[in-house]
Amino acid sequence: MGHAIKHFKTITRHRHEVIKNCARAGILWQGLRHDLSKYSPAEFVSGAKYYIGTKSPNECERAEIGYSKAWLHHKGRNKHHFEYWTDYNAVKRKVEPVEMPLNYVAEMFCDRVAASKIYNGKNYNDNCALDYFIRGKANRFIHPNTSDLLEKLLTMLSQKGEEETFRYLKGLVKEYKKERKGNK
Image (tube, rainbow, N blue to C red):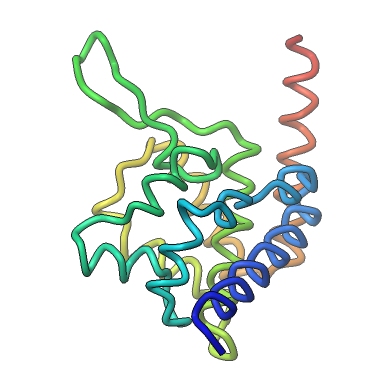
């Protein structure tokens, strides 16, 4: 089977897993829109070219050319990536991470759990997403509050499992939506 078909199947399986997770978290609409840019030529062509099935094609593209064109396109269009949430601070005169709204942190959590399941396959367990997060923590350019919340959710998943973690996350999202509605 060609790399394009395998890549299509992988991103679609991943997307379906995210949709399921987002439904459990109370953000189904976000789940339905999740990662649609991966099907655009700007991302799909690179994804198919660098597909190996055990890790993100973006990592392979980065290893070959020093950066990932697909990732640069993707992170600028998908608010569930903390890399999207940076902005220039005029007072400090530098780019800084911005705290992510809760609904996008929730989607990021759903995405990380799904990616761990897809890339780890039969070796997946509820520690996988936390382990991945911890491995990259020192080098991550992310707002501390966003990082802390994501780590809290991943730790909860690791210790208490999916059912309890998604129930907790759904409650957070419900409260967040209520607060946003009240502020309008």
